[in-house]
Amino acid sequence: MDKMWAGRFQKAAAPEADDFNSSIAFDSRMYRQDIQGSMAHAAMLAAQGVIGQAESEHIIDGLSSILEDIDSGALEIDMGAEDIHMFVESTLTQRIGDDGKKLHTARSRNDQVALDLRLYLREEAGEVVALLKKLIAAVVKCAEENQDAIMPGYTHLQRAQPITFAQHLLAYAMMFMRDVGRVRDAAARMNYSPLGSCALAGTTYAIDRQMVAERLGFDGITLNSIDGVSDRDFCVELMSAFALIMAHLSRFAEEVILWSSWEFKFVELDDAYTTGSSIMPQKKNSDMAELVRGKTGRVYGDLVAMLTVLKGLPLAYNKDMQEDKEAVFDSLDTVKHCLGIFTPMIATMTPLKDNMYAAAQKGFINATDLADYLTKRGMPFRTAYKTVGQIVAYAMSHGKVLETMTLAEYKTFSDLFEGDLYEEISLSACVRKRISAGGTGPASVQAQIKAVKEFLQQ
Ligand code: ARG
View 1 (cartoon, rainbow, N blue to C red):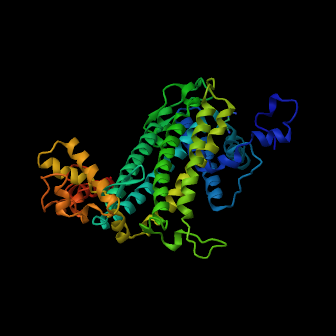
View 2: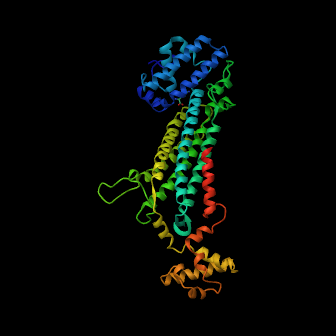
View 3: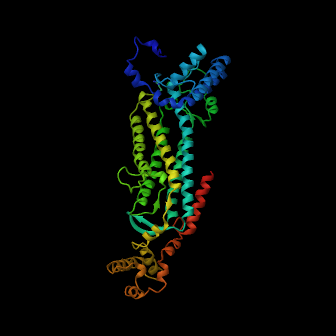
């Protein structure tokens, strides 16, 4: 096929240069957006008298037949084409003849690709939000069912204070809710049409960019033609949001992996989301969670690749920018893939409350509450803290925990101790008494569940 731009050249590009230059293998997924953009452009050109009404209709009919045929599989996208824009335009001209050659009036591939990518990613951002909401729904359901499941909360991966499994899970709900906000923000900021920026300087035709923008559901137009074709901030923003989603998924994945180990056994993953070993018959591995953790690196890498493409790139369009798509699509696909597998994995996971509770009984995680007991009876917190430290050391050296020390033993450390201390340091009391807003106490957990559910309605 002769190149559309062949006029200026004495000979054809070397086949390997053609291959190197071609982006169709990865930009063909934008065929729908490319065609929709072209339809809006053709309608506008006629409305502005740049091309005839009949020509415009001819073009639009031709484009919709192409869309239909690609959708149905009747038309196969030619992987030998330079990119999806060239493929659609040349197919149009093959189908409808010379009228097809008028479509590219007052347009360049530079604004065209910027438009297509915004349209594509805007739609996909909606998909990612929907997937995030499904995950949040699964997390909050599990939280709701496990408000009474007491487990150790950790700092430094050392048992720290008693919490509920619900409180722990809700921390992840908060992260994913912020992720939804970030993806929505990025989608809103990208929702401006660059079409009509043309190659870089705008055009001599009296085009109506606003009309195109409205037809395509944009909130407005980009205000500077050079920025219109050279901006890929919207990719970076979306990919940053994706990188954070992966950060959250990988933290969650890591905990699921730990929790499924024999050492913890806080949860049992459903067989459907685990794998066995080729040699060790007893094994049940949390491969899905591990893969999610591993794929996080790819999504970070994609973000860094995109930022690096843009670094120091002079205005306006440079072919370097064709590298945007593989990075942004890989990061998008990976995030969708991971969210798609993570949600059912969480939804089918069985929390093992007894094991959580047993772990909470070891490790002196009610020591803070014992210090609070003394503080509420008049001892300054720092003194109480030190006293309890000595009590813990004593208990450890006598093979005891706080619950099994006698009152007489306690009295040797402070006269403030009375028989009611045992109730005060019981694990359920420790949780129940955490009444501060956002804490692990039942009212706070219920308020969080309510807030998350309200968020899911939006
Ligand atoms: N395939 C190109 C890309 O993805 C389309 C824009 C080409 N523009 C150009 N001036 N060569 O960036």
